[in-house]
Amino acid sequence: MTTVLVLGANGKIAKLAEDRFFADGDLKVKLFLRNASRLDSANTKDAEIIEGDVTDESTLAAAVKGVDVVYANLAGGNIEDQAKAVVQALDAQNVKRLIWISTLGIYDEVPGKFGEWNNKTLGSYITNYAAAAKVLEDSDLDYTIIRPAWLTNHDEVAYETTQRDDTFKGTEVSRKSVADFVYKLVKSPTQEVRHSVGLNKPNTDGDKPAWY
Ligand SMILES: NC(=O)c1ccc[n+]([C@@H]2O[C@H](COP(=O)([O-])OP(=O)(O)OC[C@H]3O[C@@H](n4cnc5c(N)ncnc54)[C@H](OP(=O)(O)O)[C@@H]3O)[C@@H](O)[C@H]2O)c1
Image (cartoon, rainbow, N blue to C red; front, side, top):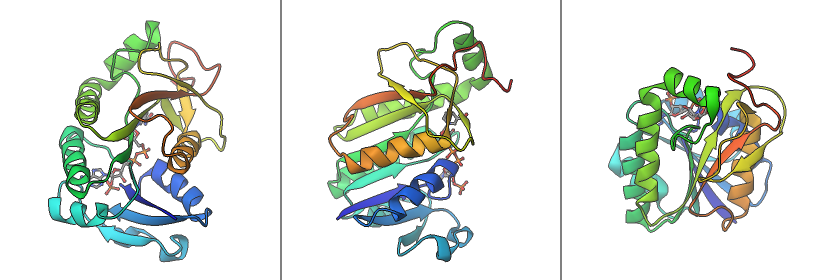
């Protein structure tokens, strides 16, 4: 039985991943989120629910204790501080495996006009997320950083991957695809360890995401 802790458990990708975790009888699930009253206990099976902010050291430490894998689906202007708090908690509790949702563009790996548009549109969001990714890369954790393209809510699982030093492909990917990839990583703990993986829907190259 693998125990997975979800940080930011009310996030949109997180909820899709949780559906996959709940359907898997070999996973024990812990859900960590701010304002836990938003979760409907009818939909969370027998998951353990912990209310907290990841920057609250003692609450996070207690949540991380004894888990096999942490999946962080976090966001915000203080994402670098959140990364530091998460790395510190995993180190302190001797937990090695971390799956971290980041974004495209943190290595200036998005080519051409789309890359220029992405940088301009996202601005300091990218530099904040790059700084957070560096916190993980400077740690000795078994992390996987996921860099999704622009997210859609399409009901589809269709994606390909690129590695850190590859040119990013495509413009979009569905949240359901990211959740699928997260689930596969949770089930295969040695896959993509210390890798930073770009995720995109095949054949979606363009100067902007299709809906812009
Ligand atoms: N939109 C795009 O096209 C795109 C593309 C690539 C990557 N991304 C990134 O992918 C990530 C996941 O996407 P998503 O759609 O699942 O995002 P989301 O729905 O905004 O989920 C992020 C979650 O992080 C939680 N969170 C933020 N700060 C926290 C803290 N200090 N402690 C605990 N929880 C905290 C939020 O909690 P609350 O619910 O309490 O606010 C929220 O539920 C985000 O970082 C997003 O920026 C987005």
